[in-house]
Image (cartoon, rainbow, N blue to C red; front, side):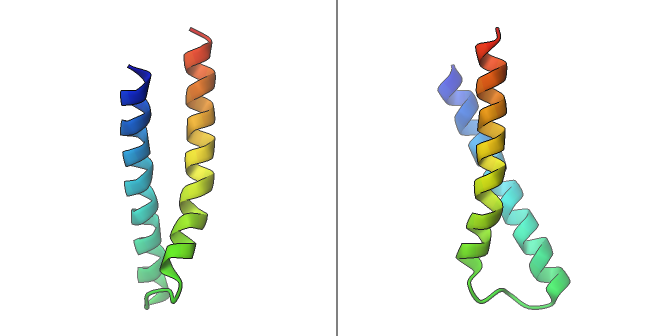
Length: 61
């Protein structure tokens, strides 16, 4: 069951990161030159924090 939960949250984090990147590009008025790197810099901290919180919450039950 945990794998399904982690997969769903991973997909949501991916979609959130993409939306944040698009918002930043819209605000800037042009696409970033190294879009993949900026996406990774947005995605990585969100996914690490989210999965750490999930592991903590699931371990305490």
